[in-house]
Length: 308
Image (cartoon, rainbow, N blue to C red; front, side, top):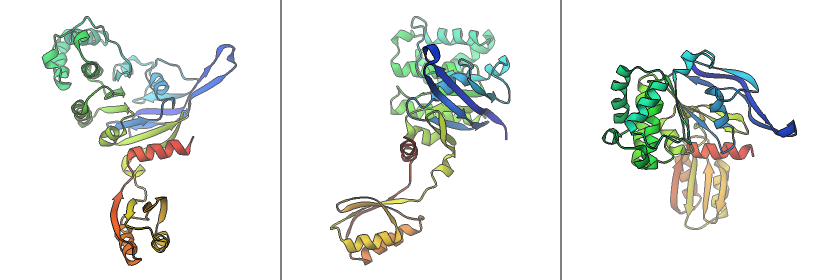
């Protein structure tokens, strides 16, 4: 398999003044991001995500370990030209128009005028800013600036697009547009490396994720595999009965209880109707019986709490 990103025990340690304290920001990180996938890079604040991204971009030097982008070193200028980046915190020249800003960034990447004349209108259309092409950036809302940031990240048609919180300032319609754009980029064979705290958005677009905690990868893999856990059922009874609860415990694991409500984990989806029959046969009257599968947010919280 071809890898867009591959890291080998990538480590970054920051030393305080006089080397009295060590902060391990990234600890022996091993990642493999396939070409052409949407990869979610997740973790709580301080997990090492931004430091990792800065190393991948060549802005921060690793303390030890190494990494490859499309099998080559980041010191290769040809590799750098294949990367587009939207930082979480960005500040554009607010006196420029959207069109002028993209021309400026395009020239910085070495794009010629003929290509820019074609690409600038294309990307403004893709992010929904065609009508504001000649408006100054200072007139843009935070959400519109976010869209412009995505436009500059994809302007030179990179093969790897690194997006750090791309939907943080967008309303629901804007988030949907970004999702559609990400899926469009994927359909063209692009690799999208996505960092976001909006886990519901990540779950909709990502093929694979890695969850960091303390600078280490705690979980990594395809969402279809990571979310294959035992299903749980939320149950509410008219009246709590110890006989009913004993029958439930005989065939399921009760995760939590609160009066007449409880949540139980069963071995497989086939056991869900059997649990309902068990409760009724034991004399329980059901008010609510709601099976649910673990979401990415559930997985994220569970992993982070496991490693606190």
